[in-house]
Image (cartoon, rainbow, N blue to C red; front, side, top):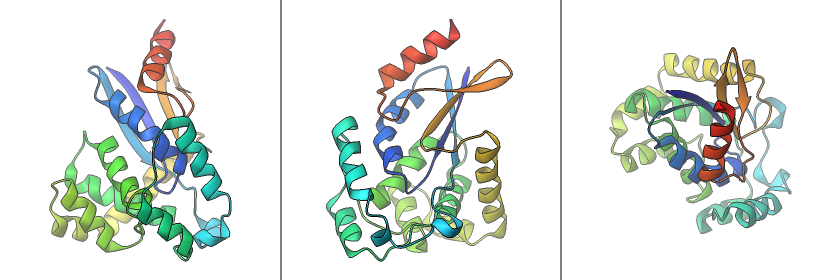
Length: 205
């Protein structure tokens, strides 16, 4: 079994561009992908979308290089500009979903969480987003709401973010494969699943 760690951020446009390749790869036999949430918009980096003038141009690059689209509702949220991306809240939302879904669905949960923002324009700080995403995944919305409010889930989210930092990850997305005693980063965010498979095969020798 090949062990991969996918470090993402709920508000990272390049992660949204990368998600089709990671989802396809995660379905391969002999691969196990564990996700960890990142810390792109935390502390002093929290600000309204209107403060990040680069986002629209960056997203145009994402679409040009990966083919992944951004939804009309997201574009409306970006135009309005008042939503404040908070990666800590996004990490907690993802951890709540995972607490209800159980292991083995990490990448699916990442995709659903990011679609809520990048397609539907929803805030990942809104508890209603958690229940909406849960319902779309066939999870119990009530159990998800309870998990979101659970201090232990909040602590687990912080621990997961700390684990990502301990791996030395300072950019998103990052896909890591275990190679001997350490881990090696695989592929840029523009990689296809075929590209990633070829790179993994080369690392295996």
